[in-house]
Length: 261
Image (cartoon, rainbow, N blue to C red; front, top):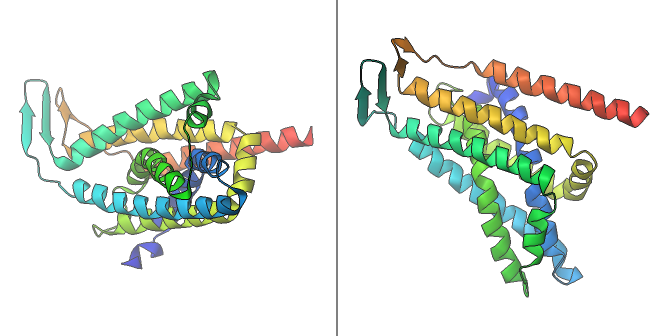
């Protein structure tokens, strides 16, 4: 099961995915903090930790569900005309829908964070929280919404890695567990760092646009899509890793330069 960890590509994917899961989970930490702060002080730490543990369990369950759906590789419908050919499968539909969702979610999130920075917090403050159980329910519901782009990001980063069907799932589960543990231990420092450097979160959302486009292209490739006789090829994951690593390197340089100033 863990043979996949002997591959350098798998380690690069795991490290990149863990980083993205942490950065994309910042909103989750902020929401959980806002919800927990409405409780008495003695319950706040309990609500935060319990909320993150339930978030981890929920994401792992969703990973298994999505991985099962992506396993549906046999085409069930064909489109064949003079200029287009498609063999549509369950796998292709999930990847294509996920890509469109990531494009929409990342674009709208960037818009909200730039144009309406307090939109989400204002909505949350309008909701009443009277007990620990009430807080946990809201944390789980909010995390479910945030889990969707997190899970689709994991699928986009690991799809096609490994020789066995469960290899990608192992990487995704490990990345989710590591990211949640890091968030539980360093929730406040991480939140403060991102608050002081909001460009990091914008950068992560920009990566989602890239991953969303890659999922759409992957869906077309798995459908053996042909347009005017030209088949859509696979996009090597190395291009994605390089783009993310280079962007992060530039951003860390900017942070260092601003700190020196």
